[in-house]
Length: 309
Length: 325
Image 1 (spheres, rainbow over the protein chains, first blue to last red):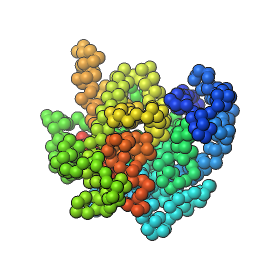
Image 2: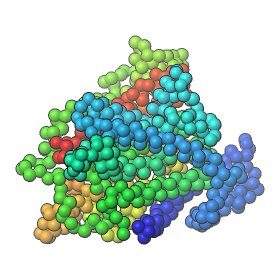
Image 3: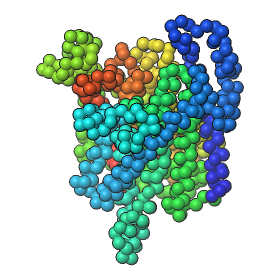
Image 4: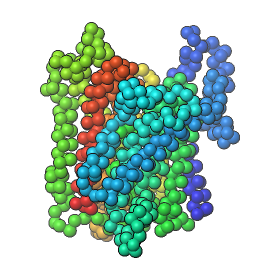
């Protein structure tokens, strides 16, 4: 187990370096002057530009810049923006909001998705099954921003049940329910379908028949024997989804005006402030890679037949 | 469907999307469940099955309608989608304009019909490019294995680690900031950024299908008879590995149309001279409280089109998978 984790962690290193370098290259080779419009209506004085280029090492080759950035990053230093703000501080202010949003979304999709999937998987063909299939199809085809606007208009402006914008930071949990639902709605549909297929397949497995024959109560058969064996595809999906949720939060955060990293990175791209973008994306890639590793380790817990040696 | 990478989870026919390198070794236990013992081919079986599915018929006629709109918009409307009159700005649906007018006074019905073309073109081009890149690399990685497979899989991991929306924003703002207004150039950029971020999904699907096909007896027989690598790959492995990619491509086509709309909505995808559903939705963003119909109609067409492709993919997958018969 320990050796497996170590090997996987070593495998992450090239992927991490590759992804961050790709982002670094894309962001810092942006055509256009990063200092355009930074000094009001006039063009920036040459002395200012020279000082800034010197300070941010913009005249060095890209690889050297990247190496310097990575070295600082290893020491926990995200660098600072052109305005002199600490990127690390900006991220640590914004990140809790996005994590809260992603946790709410993950909880909603896991609870509703699993419940609906188990229910329809056990019942088999029928009205409820068809209803779930049609509604998940619909959720899958609905773009996130349409869901977001629809909920915002209907529950926010018309009924007044939810707050249309979550401007406070840190965001209060109860105000994140609607945005979390919007963010998690697509994945909720996938979780439902995966659970349903998996349960329907395992329903007729030998170990379930044995458990029923032993006289175990229905609850234990479904809750322990069936669910645990059907959980692997669902857990895989939820794990990879955590990374996707954080990246996909840009749209949701924009609609509900949540002060999270999605907003931060969008402003960074528009304002050509490369260090914000690279910092946030590096963090997201790290979260994505580690959650994938966690999922692979969970396999062994869920299914004792899987061993890592 | 905002993040097309999730389309993969809906499209895999078999559960072996993640085949480890060790599984390259030719164990015959995998056994293809897709081989019928009847003399008819799997494809004709699937087609017979498809024609009787209501899901397929609904999806097929919806797609045919949208394609007709994209090819011959003048069959549906005579109004010029580029003619704006501020006097009728934000007017609701009426007998003259079924869907009403938008902020600039454009006829929404005409624009929705004409917008189908851009959305469909972007979807088809992005899907073709994704399947070509991902399919070729996946087939090669699956056939040759070894260091080539390892290298390609790591490169795919690098692109896979980027969240889709974020990666597309960065690519589009890097290359799109030249301020071009040429329609072809804008479309090309959007198509490229979608394909560059999506090919790893297609490659993984193709790779695992190719590895399964490689272990079959007919491939071994072909090799024993002295067939060349290119013949084995093109004549024996490709036809037997193409089914899961086909399903993925159908669903991805819908997903890419949604992705184009999302990027346009963020102000980075297609823009002004181009008429597309995403552009219309982006235009309606600031006025949805006073004129919700400007959002409603393009969004409804967009959702229906994506729905049609996802349904088609679902139907094709069920028809190709003998377990669900």
